[in-house]
Image (tube, rainbow, N blue to C red; front, side, top):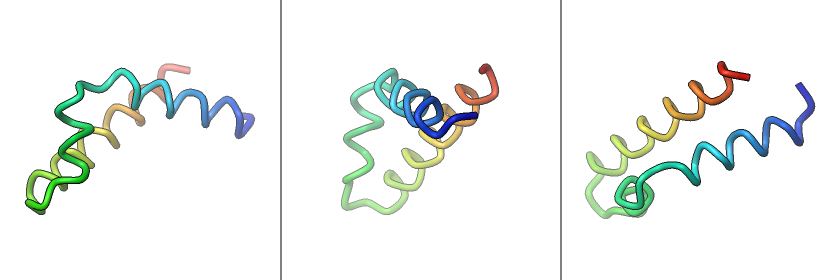
Length: 51
């Protein structure tokens, strides 16, 4: 897969995430940040596997 397409798919997956997940990425609480990272990683994997 071309890197530009991969980049576009990843950005689209991030844009589709709820705002609270994006805000939790900068949380001072490590558990919240870790959960948000897991959610984002899972959504990216799903988006890439659908292509």
